[in-house]
Image (tube, chains in turn red, yellow):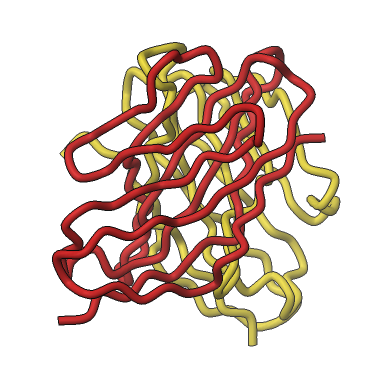
Length: 115
Length: 115
């Protein structure tokens, strides 16, 4: 069964510093996609970045990059040059690409950026 | 605005009453998802549709919950005989058939409070 684990309930980072949010996953499907979402206090889930299991390179989107280590089944999100507006909940999610189109989410990490 | 819209945004009801939530997905998206999110937790999968067909339903979804997407466009989620444990944010999301990432596009959610 597919599973997402986020072990950091909360993280602090100084403004302009980089921060890594951890995510490990479990699946028996060789083909899957990994996603990160941001949920500000307003509540709307915002898609940040995607990594496919067969992608050769780590995904990057602006200040977001995904540190994908397939053998370790980890997909950590790296936010560079943190900004105050990055303070939010961050969720890692996965979808197995063979068959079901169900996405499962981790429990999230609350990030607080300090001025 | 052509994003995912949900209505109502907030609903307060008494235990035992029925409630219905509506979701209008992005128009060209053929997959529609319902998730439930309680405070401090990640979104929990409830069900999803491809066009008008309900393809998967969580075992956590009791028979008091029913979802429809009659014409493959908007969807409704009905909760009958509400219980206090049903208090949560109900999130709707949509996704196109296949694209670069297949990420979910979320609405702002419908918050349910059962007294």
